[in-house]
Length: 340
Image 1 (cartoon, rainbow, N blue to C red):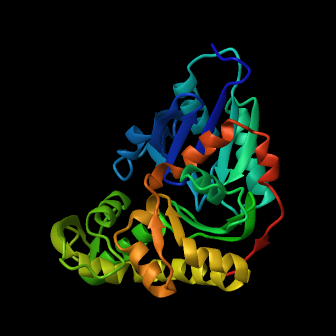
Image 2: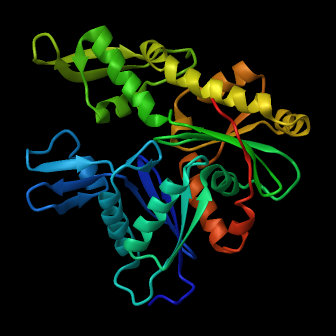
């Protein structure tokens, strides 16, 4: 049974939800997808089971991703998804849990309120918010309380958050809506333009993981891709290689580079020296695109390090914050925003 000290950390991602329970670690990792029956408005599936339905549902069932670009796009579905995940982790308990939820560094007050309201309605007793770059840095083992500056680039599914952190808070930061989803969209556009082949989101994501790259590779990887020919309307299979993915992903990778450059341009000289010395830390599932660290390093001249467990860093950071929720008040200090 819950005690009043029961605490849960949630990385409420556009693509994946990770839940950390105090004392247990990460206990849930599921896609942010909900399948709903339009006739009865009943939830048919949540998480991985719902993700498998994307693009394959009959007319009366719709698979929804309730979070887009790092924020809630469908409040009601988000609340039902959170309730399902909290119940799955906690079971039927008397006492409602306290939650720490991660949000992008530049969400508006309205977007913050939507997250808090959805979590409270889903069964939370109290909700704390923490910015993703700070949680990612903590989860990667960085001591953010020091006066030494650290640059974190957190690339998720919907947003890329870039922040310079020192003395426990963001000195300056920016958040752009270019991340894993935009890589997938770029691959879909490329396949339609070059091969006249329509592919779905799941196929695009599989291509990104298996052969996607943003920096020239020594040896090309190839993959057979199945889709629908837009001219004949018939299913076709085409062979695609990594060099073509390099071309397809050039635009979104360039936008992330521009955002990093803009933050570096505005970083105070002392902190810039720290970043030059310590390098840039990359976290989030989106940073695992082949060659992204090499591309950023080659363009900025700064060493780039990918965190050991990049996908889980934000959730692990939430877990560390759970040990002392009082620090959240210190982590919400005013900061400078960089307009891209």
